Amino acid sequence: MLTTISICWNDKLWRLSFCCILFMGVVVASLMPYLSIIGIERLGFSDTTYAIVTTGGALMSLLASVFVGVYTDQTGRYREVLITSIALGIIGSLAMYLMPAKGTFILAHVLMIPLASTAFTQYFALGQLAANRNPKIDRDFSSSAIRAGFSLSFALTPPVWAFFIAQGMDLFIIYAVMAVLNIFILTLVFTSWPKDQTSDNNEKSGITFFQGLRELTALPVMIRVFAISAILGAVNLYNIVLGLIIINNLDGIEAQAGLFAGGVALIEVPVMLISPAILRYVSKSAFIGVGALIYIIYLIPFGTMSSMTSAWWLMLPAGIGAGILLSVSVGYMQDMMTHRPGAGGALVSVSHFSAAIFASGVFAFGTSVTDYVGTSWIGAGCAIFGAILLMGFDKWRLRSKAYLLKQGIEV
Image 1 (cartoon, helix red, strand yellow):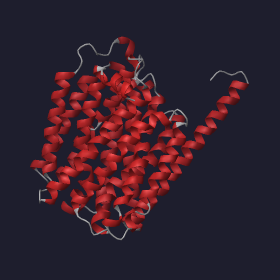
Image 2 (spheres, helix red, strand yellow):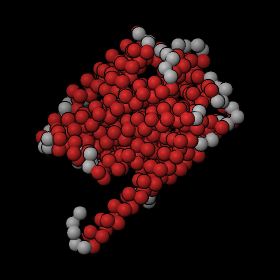
Image 3 (spheres, rainbow, N blue to C red):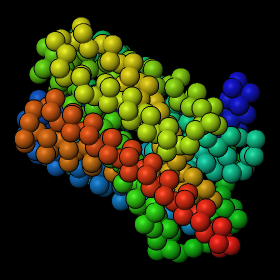
């Protein structure tokens, strides 16, 4: 494994992608455990309104990611698009820090921060581009390691915030720190973008925007995206209800949400690094199914614990399950667009942000008919449904392909 890590790290483009997503992870990890608390507990949004706002933001991220993925494949202008995305993140974070209000929250989290999140798409696209250029890089390990960097940030960041919040720090300071971190990432891109690693004509797709869009919206692709979104929706739902369940059901405090999230992410990292080795023996869809089963072992009993003291052990199944789902799904999505780094990265983001929409929808529906705990159970059911759909569809596709080949038909 050390040799594989060394090969990736010595590639300038891959290293830049990893470092950028590492710091982007710090930005996201600073906010996500507390976003629902800020929106609902601090700014006073209702559960339904909060769900509508976050759904709108996820939809904006999804549409922008598709556009960016196809556009960068066409033009090879990764650097310019990335700089624009990061700049929007700086503006959105500063707006929330300087003018914390409902209107600012809607503007920042429906428009500016979602547009900034397209950087997530581009970091995976750059990692895939590096793997395409460097045959020594293992593709599955490359995508898993980049995703592990994102999770490593989640392991280290929330406990730090938990300490300061426990000391009485105001939650809105998080946005100021996010702006500073985005400025650092922007500086990193300006100064470290490899001068000899620009996209040339051979790496441009050579297809029109609408042809690229049709590739992304083909039925077999959309079925898989829907299944993955249902599975990852359970993980996104955890981000929404974690702090709310801790405060309202487990008699916990805000800081414990950060500690729990950090512990889960810490467990995710080694799972993500080991996953490529396991994939030599099992298919990605089967492994995703295993990850979904492990994850619901956490999701179902979490809110029924008597207190936070009895809930800490659930970090183990949460971390193992999420580690499998979040890393293997990246390679699964990119495999569908192997020769289109931008489109492959777009699919990663489409599944990611579709999952956020899925989670917001489940949250809105669930809280209208039950409590936060019942809502998490609905999310668990969606994850199992998605896993069954994914494995069933892939099995059917393999049988169909085998039948066509037997009839002498090339596929």
